[in-house]
Length: 394
Image (cartoon, rainbow, N blue to C red; front, side):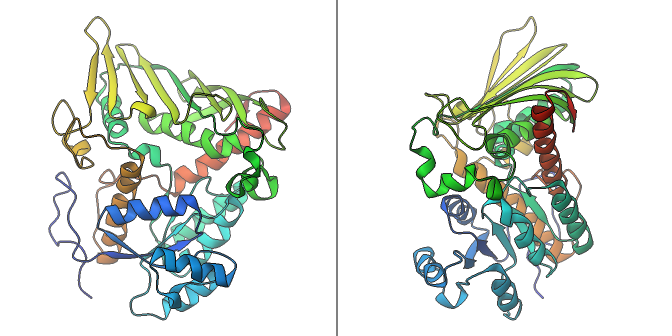
């Protein structure tokens, strides 16, 4: 079988090219699937070739036409997809799972047990038991498994992570993160099909806001700081019209080393759309990043002039960060490009596995199954803390 990657890879240099595009299948055909497919295609490392795009066979085929997928490879469920794709010489190399939360576990498991690599939306699963079992399946299969904590794939977030690792901030002493949105402000917001399931505990799980955007905030804080969140005190709220699940959460958090922090997330903050903001402060300095201004990273070393680093070639951006740069400074990139960065790293991990190439542990920074499990633990601890009105260990 022809190798996908070069036999000689400079793991410190730019990401290597592929000799062929990988074949990607889609499970779930909603809005986020379209976004991810767009990003995957942008990388020139993936072709979207198959899909279980709806549980309704006719609708699945209709969607396949819109996705330019051969009708013969439009399946009515993921079991049929696995069975038929495994029989093809050009079967899928990997699948994206973009279903509602309750289907992540069964869909991911069946592909992993068939030896097919998976990239899965978050939260990983709706229960800790399912999350732990899925990790066992991943470990046994040796498949690549990526979790869609996509905010960690912005170039300036990777730069922020490097700055923290370098010790520029000194000893971290507090971490603050928030994710403010406003799209649930209208009273009829919950009537939309893509919103209804997010408010249904049978589908969304025990949380809505926490499991959807709170997990992004928690992951980002840990990803950049390098510190594990170990304890939290959470209060859930319904700040707008009545809903069966929370639309807002306020948390006091604690990281390893007894480092304090805060986490806030809401969908009831008019004027905020992509309001994900991270601030990390240490004994020597601090940094701040705001997703609505994702091109820049504010860095302060106490007693020195403030610095603003900008995404693009040069200007203080490291060579490792430049791997994710597509355009020069002044030509903005955003969320689609962050998704593309995730799909680039996923493609390289899949290619390396298929080629039998051993890679350095720090070569690719995409979120892995262990981070997905930690996300589910975070959700469970949040629910427990809110119910018991007490601190909860994660």
